[in-house]
Structures are given as C-alpha cells and as structure tokens.
Length: 315
Image (cartoon, rainbow, N blue to C red; front, side):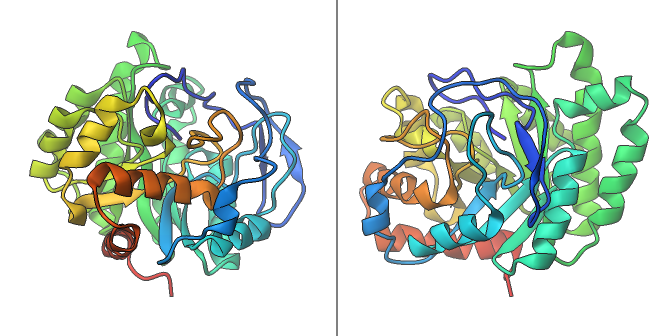
C-alpha cells in the first residue's frame, strides 16, 4: 500500500473488502475517499504499451468501499490487453497473505510478496498475535512463487510515537527474513526516510531492495541509488503537484527503475481519485518516459528486465 503521495492524504490502511482469488468477497472496513469505481473509459485501452511490462506492486485482495468487484482473472485480462502482462501481488496482512498464496497457485501471471504491513505490526503486538503472525509469514515465504518480503518498513503518518519501537523491530525482522530466504525486500516508507535508510544500513539491506511507491525527492533518490536500491514509481509521479517526485525520477539510473500501480490506490492522471488497476499503468509509464526524455519502448524494456532481475522469471 502506498507511501506518502504528493498532495494526497493517503488511503485507509484497511481493505474495504477481501476475498479469495476465485470467490465472492467478505466485507471489511475502510474509509471512503475520492471517486469510486474504475474509469468508465480509459483511452489507454486503445493505445497499449509497445513492450510488455510488470506491475511491480498491486493489491488484488483489496476493494475500496463502494466499488464493484473486479475478479482476479478479469484484472489480469484487462492488464494484459494494454501490455501489463505480469504482476507482483502484495499481501501485507494475514487475510491478504492467504489471498496471495492462493493467487500465485492459480495464476501464472502472478508472483507474490508477503509481509506484515508496518501499521499492522503494533496492532498485532497489542493483541498478543504478533509472534504467531511472524511464524505465518516465515512459513509461507518458502513457496517458490513468493519472490519478495513486503511490504515492510516504517510509517510514521498512521502509527503514533507509541508504536515506533515495535514498528522498527518489525522492519528489522522482515529485513532478516528476506536475507535468510534470498528474496527481494519491498519497502513501505511514509514520513520515515531517515530511519528507513538508517535501519537498512544497520541491518544490511538484502541484495535486491525496492523502495515501493517512492516518495522522496532527488536527494533521497541519490542516497538510495548509491546504496544499490531499486526505486519503484507509481501514479503519483503523474500528479501536477509532484514536481519533487519527477526530479527524483530524473536522477535514477535506468537499471534501478521499476514501475507499479499500488492498485487500488494512487490512480494516475487523468483518472486521479478513481479506483486504480493494473490496466491503467500505461499512463504512468508514458509519463515517466516523458520526464526522462526517452522513448517508451526503451523504458518498457528496461523496467521489464529490472523486474525479472529483482523477482526472477514468472515461468
């Protein structure tokens, strides 16, 4: 789920609705924000990407309150039609993890990332359930189609000072797990840039570390690049008020660049506020190419190659 996004208060951290990849949804709770539903028409459907790419971070298990259900097979088909042929499904609570494990068994277009979201770690600790939750993540992380630990990290926007210590402990636990399993690490960083980098330095980052939904400026981007991290950009880079994010994008070497939706959140312009989905990612890819002054096919090939370098082959 999203890190801080320019000009956006950020989504609720709880899914509006969760389901298994082939079943009806069971209700949960979430806040409402923005327009609801997928765009009725997106011109990207008539202009697919010229080279297939990977959505490096999506939450197919989450449906925003008030939305119509979009089943996984339909989400995959819509994405494929515009050149987004492979997805990294991220399960970052226990229900989402269960969904992810089923999805990666059913759908060859999907590989998984699993973790306990930094905002869930203090809640699980307070309920006396954190140790058991860690055991679940540890046990399931050996699956051959689990390719990343994430999203883990720090979120000082939604977790108050009383939860920071346990959140940092949780981040360290996930870093260690990613290294023990030889997996990539997807990082959630919201209002916590300095501590994220400090803890990664102290623990030693996994060989493949991804700053999901990168939200820093050019200086932060350079620090991440110097450490060898990958930076993943979402629809926020298309927002009018996201100048600092575009400045960050401009300094990232092509070989350290990834792209994502963070769907159902962070829908790119011109559909900002509507529900996001992988089939809308071409808007973000084309905006990124424009910022970098490069042609779209070259960018597509690079992010596809980078995705396989981080997560391995899908088949």
